[in-house]
Length: 225
Length: 225
DNA sequence: TATCCCAATCTGGTATCCCAAACCGAACCA
DNA sequence: TGGTTCGGTTTGGGATACCAGATTGGGATA
Image (cartoon, rainbow over all chains, first blue to last red):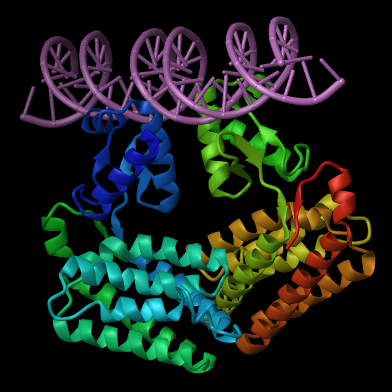
């Protein structure tokens, strides 16, 4: 793997893992020292992370993207449109991508979680459910759009204060959506998915909005509406 | 404007204008000589164009993205989902973005075309109609998605063999869609837009599929389904 | 003549170097 | 004391030198 890809992945992990605070300034020289790579691959990595929305420009200089509630809301609306379209496509498929890496695999994902599962795992599987669900429709662009959107939502979802009941409800909704898709009931799947995403969005925004002081106290830049 | 942006824009223009053939190999050194810039800004430009799908990697080395009929089909499906969602959002707005740079401006776009209009203008305004229509919904991500999709479709739309009647029909459909949005009739607008994009897609794919020998004869790499 | 092999060449990847502009702080003036 | 200016420092943008691996073209050989 090239150094550029290494730097990119490590930086992304640090940002998504909140090891670098949202809103924090980044200098190419600091990254150079931190990762022991020269500026050429670093700049390439920053350019890619910029297109992913994880870092941005602050005049001259780089900044880790802040938590932006307006952006989160818009990304979520975008993702709802794309995911619903993907699920409708999947329902229209003859076998609904039911085999080899399709719906069954996703069902396996859901069932891999139980009371013992760590928070990291819940988070990861929660992402993967939506990404995989979109992937089996066969349209690369819809799948990529969902991946990008989930990436942009990742830090916020991690910060969200979620109690066990809310988590269990989300999981139940995942199962319902999956069942509807397996049955090929496009309208029901679309409605369930839409409601699921809409509800997640509202709770996510509300949770972050309520806790924005706490977040700022942790050194995170939070841009509220 | 930085050199990187200049190189990026010029390269993009050359690719979209088919001055560099789809599928053609690009070397950083050739670009260096061609644009009299050093490899640093050139690499940055290539990285960005890669995310736009205009250039890609061919093992080691860069390649201008070929005309890929499967990709075009998928991008079009993606764009239909996003554009319909954007229009529904717009219809739900109180004033439907009707003022200052909103719907009226788009109407102006359409009316700026007549029998005297050059092919370049038709092409540009055809793109802008969809981009602007998506923009007024207020969701940056939906708007960006449409922009990206139209960019990916741009070369193919340019190559498409279109007679005047087909062109006029497309324009009439644009007007109908706009009228439905102005009236706030979300379902009608969505249905019209969906049909318009679906029809465009089918004709585009069919046109390129029929002419793929001619395109290959011009040195264009065409990947058919 | 066909084939194989090696060296010259060309490629993108990386490390550095230089530069102009922006930033920051201290010193100085009102 | 508060504002301003000015110079050093730091920044990203660009240019270039160097490297390792891939490619290729030609010449030697069977």
